[in-house]
Image 1 (tube, rainbow, N blue to C red):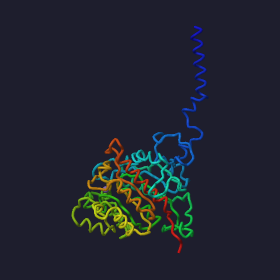
Image 2: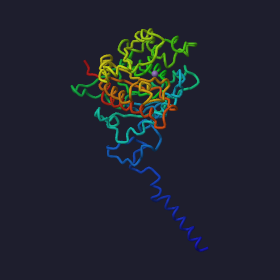
Image 3: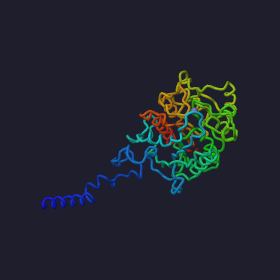
Image 4: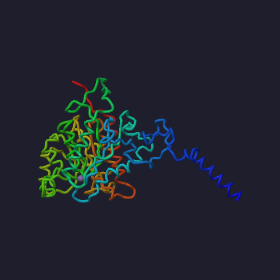
Length: 398
Ligand SMILES: [Mn+2]
């Protein structure tokens, strides 16, 4: 009995100690660990006691800001936002899970600190405020309503004031002025799709700030098809889908005619007239197979000659990459570029005025257990954000 009592007392003492002693500290975030309130990157003199595979997943472990909710007054320079919409897709559905999948594939981006060796920049430590705004609320029951929700959500972010000022030109030292049509300095929005239909409402949003825009579009498909060719258009709403949104964008005057370009094209066609229709929508074309003749340098040159220093919107269909490297997509096409080749081409866009961007058609249900596709999507966006971090959206006033 005396022994039992003694052990009960000992247990009670141990419990008290666990509640205010060292055991407690082992379970709780330590005072000097900034995460999850602030993203951390090795090399910035902070203690990385937190692991990259723990916690709630945001893109590249960026801070989650409820930009469309309670944090609507918080300024940023680059926002990641999901658009989980896939009811405009023609073959494999599932891109509504793209934003969640891409975030999971992005967890490792900052393991070593995020410094981009070939571009000589760390986009996470470049002085810009980067945030993950979560997802735009998108209904899966009504495409017309969903497309309006995406436009409203994107425009709300695009029209926010930026966190950072434009500053001065790195060469001349003269102050920079915005390149937008409305004269304002806008933040950049990187959208995680979603099927490719989301680009129509995004371009409607972009138009409010920049007017008709040049587009760089990486995809195995044209996406300028007339509704009667792609889907047959049994209704007005069915006529707007992931194969026709650029046709509608062109019809609405959202795309700057003649200064837009596709890369990685390799789809079959309804016939040669599809290319005539594509010309009429204002696009140049780079075929996927041109990588064997002109290489990545030749492709980069063609793109730069087409868009020049104009404001440009960048849209990346994950199916521009070969299904060997990125199988989890809505309409896969063999004969594509490797992840390495697309990343090289994206780095070649350094210096262009990319005002916003997206990656679309990532459908994680078709991925491998090794997360091939979502990793590729995240790494592709890492190149995009590196290019953005190096090039302010400004020009020297005349
Ligand atoms: Mn495509």
